[in-house]
Structure formats: C-alpha cells, structure tokens
Length: 37
Image (cartoon, rainbow, N blue to C red):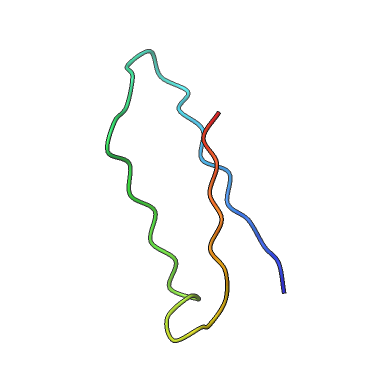
C-alpha cells in the first residue's frame, strides 16, 4: 500500500519544524520515506 500527503505553505511566512501526524501509520511495519522541496 502506498499513499502520500502533500503539505503546501500558501502564506508568505517561511515555516520550520513542521509536524505531520499519520493516524493510519500506528502499528504498521514498513518504510517511511520523506522528501522536502
């Protein structure tokens, strides 16, 4: 199973220390990949 989240800052302020919580990941075994653009 593969799914993704797209998080976009539409404001004019640079954001830091962003946290994204995935309630579907709890107890799952697998690989977590992340990328920042």
